[in-house]
Length: 422
Image 1 (cartoon, rainbow, N blue to C red):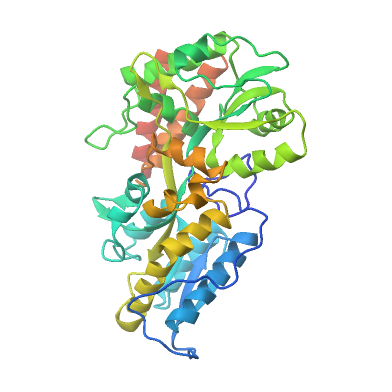
Image 2 (tube, helix red, strand yellow; image 1 turned 180 degrees about the vertical axis):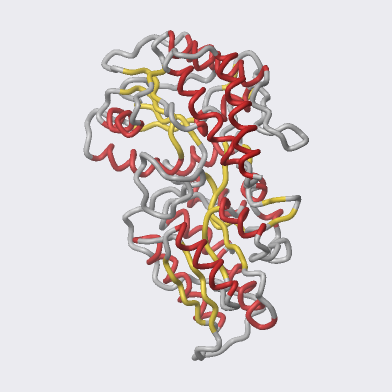
């Protein structure tokens, strides 16, 4: 869920997806200052840096024009190269081993784990001031207590989308949700994804649970996990939460007014908003996930974003230019353009407070919901954790497994996956 720009709202292969790009005219040359970069009216081929990105479509066009804006104020050419995510990582590793890596990557936080292990990117703590950025977003690019990525965008967290035509106001707590009357005209009260454990994580966090124990081992067979699974079971048994084998079907049914609420990622917001204009059955509302009534704690979805990663080989004048480009791309003007032009959540705190976000009916509630989110770990063990959780979670949501047995299965499967990966 960290595919770049316009992705289908249904599935993405990782857990850090950007909001889909808006179909708006991208800015021409973005204004701003880029400190610490030497000026030159006509940069030579030698005076350039190379940035590889997953962005395509409108996102790629915007990034290219932003790079042109940097050239205008800094005198350094920026070559922007698009590559799909897995190709991006493999090609970066190959180029780095050959001694010719690109200078920067604009990619998802999950990319930092293997690149850190291979010692192919440099720590980013001296490339920006983390205090100026949303805390959860910077933390989602930390590994072994070091910062490895500079955040460009924020978000990718789960929220509650609801249809105001069917439900004027969303439930504020899980007790309200469990006692919610079936809205007239709705076939389904609440839809969710039963195939992806990312959708279980917010409820686990709301009960105070974690995926990892303090020692770094899986912590899935816990009272908090069992409580979270019991909540899902109760919602299923009351026919409040209905899961379909294909989550894309649930998304489609929400768009045509057959589902009152759906838990989905912030990356789907623009897709749902676009459906409003073509449907008389949908009036879109966006809210945070309900507070867990027994604990009085909010559900805590994972949050991440997209990041600039710097090659470990950067040095001298090119490192200075890369730092200047990072300062430009994460400065207030460009960060506000991310909101106003691409309609994605920026990572800079000042931009998150700006009218570009707070005056936008789509971005404003997404920013509010991010306050309850927790950083998505970039640990390499996460794949084993997700794989271990998947089948037992689905079993609870189909009524085939009891929560206690499911939690035990999760723990065993995750432990086996981590052993196999060692």
